Image (cartoon, rainbow, N blue to C red; front, side):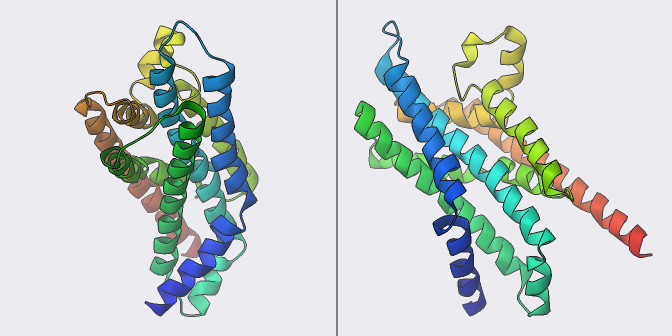
Length: 252
């Protein structure tokens, strides 16, 4: 337990409190987009209160994407390439403590972003959420982040950080656009909408928006998130098995 606590303190400093990219990319950019699209670029013909609530959910999911696909995967590959995981092994630190700390801090980062964006929405658009809504959002973020975390873990298996950077850009921003996080999915071509409505980020965004706007929950989106958790778990297991076989063949 003491070693886990030491790992948590170590990771907290480097992943959160001494990590300016988290403040800029995961908090600053979604907050800026929220201000931009709910205060500067507004459509008088729409229900601004409902749109502001829905867009709050979109920015929560976008922040989650940035934190996990760009932050978590980068940190994992950096730790591996710089020898941190080897160092922990040599000093009799359990790697399960390392991964548990890593997952916990990234989950807390997503919760922090959710809370800060909620405060921004309250200040800019008087969006107020009751206790039940906050607890519902916590549960949705906790479960909805799982397929994205698994995807981040898969991306972190590449050897070079330059390759990871290219993959992150090819996955993160198209995923945000096609899922309708930046602007409504209905404004896009029909074929893009058909793809977007089957993505885990769309299911999560859609459900969070319903919670924020006191709408009836569409449980098919919750089922969709569960299906993506299963899919990504199978993909992660397959990739892990592939790399294990490749390592065994190299060492043989």
